[in-house]
Image (cartoon, rainbow, N blue to C red; front, side):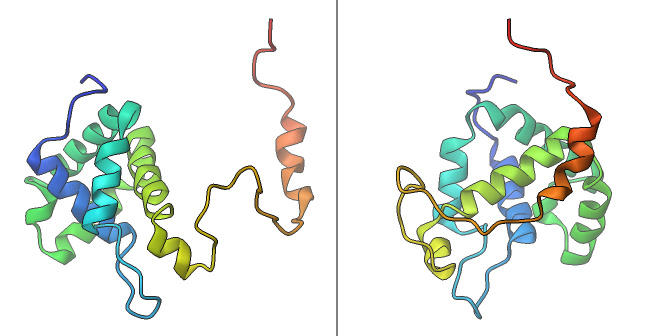
Length: 148
C-alpha cells in the first residue's frame, strides 16, 4: 500500500472506534475522546508515512473481529483489542498516531493547563527525574552503527 493512499470508509470507521477505546471522552475533565471529529480529521490529514501501517493494523483488527470492528458490540471489541494489543509494529503505530493527534488538540492542551503554543523556541521545563533508570540502557552499549 502506498503511503499516500487514503483509508477506506471501513478503515476510517474502525480508526474512530479504536481511537474512542484508547482515549474515551471525559465529562469530568471536559475533554473530547480521540474519536472526536476534529481529532479524527487531524489524524487522517497527518497520517503520511504511517498510512500503510495504520491500514495494516486496522485490517488486522477487522480480521480478528471477523468484520469491521465498528460493527461489534463493546464486549466483543474489548476481546478483539486484547488479542490485538500484543501484535507488533502496526499496533504500536496505530496507538502512537491516536495519541499524538489527541495530545495536540487545543481542548486537550487547555485541560492539561498547557499554553497553546509550539514547544519551541521557549521549550517546556521538565522536573528532574531518576536518571538511574537509564543505567540498563547504557550498560547494553552501542547497538547502532556509527556515523561515517
